Length: 399
Image 1 (cartoon, rainbow, N blue to C red):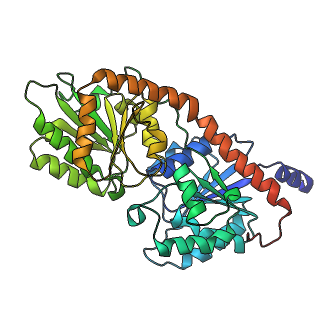
Image 2: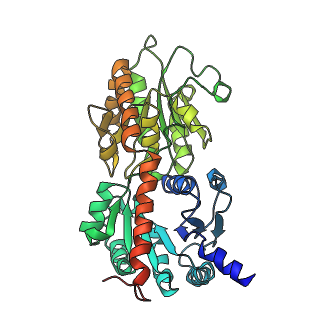
Image 3: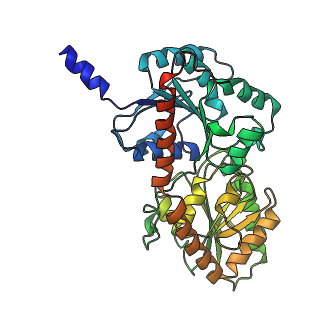
């Protein structure tokens, strides 16, 4: 019996402990779910450690062998979290610890102390408190933790260069891997969730401008509402109706609803909150808009492109790596509603342009941003890390 247990244990796939701040709706979390769903079960096992907690979003995981652990971190400096992490790493004995973004990066130090041999950190984008990644305090913290990390993963070339030039990570330790998108799930079709729509919302064949994402400050959806209101004022009663859909929830949702109500146009807009039928809702749209103040690589842009939609996005982060000006969409200055309204109007006035750009965007997704490409990229890093570091010293600290 003992020999059988040892034998079974030897053939168990390596365990990856993914450490994130909170497992809710978001691009980082969406990318993690997609990655776990597409890594073959015989290659790696997974556990997700949430410093805070998790939401119903975890139900998108298709594997039933993934444990999700919430450490329920208190607000502010909760030093007890380090002891919890240490005990958990010793208990789980993961082969790899993979942290994501600054909020979880300190777990790298705890993982090193606990003897985890392979440690990987991913950068997925910036938040409102440090839009350009120039905060000296945060970058000093990254530099202090940098020696404990074996490999860094950046989801955009913009973040890759920032890690190398600002955080001073050796280029040999940085891997740039784009997010993948389930292009079959977002394939355009004629399925419309008519029962879920407000009555008469699609009457008179409106031009529908859409946005999807967390309605957090960094996404700046109020700028999209302002642009919509500016453009709406220019239209006459005989023009094609202009409608707005913003799918998502967060602190800015109430503000956006109040702006629409104050202008008396709430009947031309629909803000349904978080939804499970995003692929179907994207099929209602004629144009996708992302007004973010900062981005890594946007999953929603990729999903919109997979849905054959032209994209108007702000000129930040990895957006310029996805949206090709004059081919698949337009880029505008962040926080400039008038410029955003002008860009939206160019597609409103030219349906052929919108359709051609959308078709080209779909082709690019199929060629360059498949889930297979993303999964292969991560597997290559995991495999290389385990093979190379098998003979490392106990500390494993990198100079």
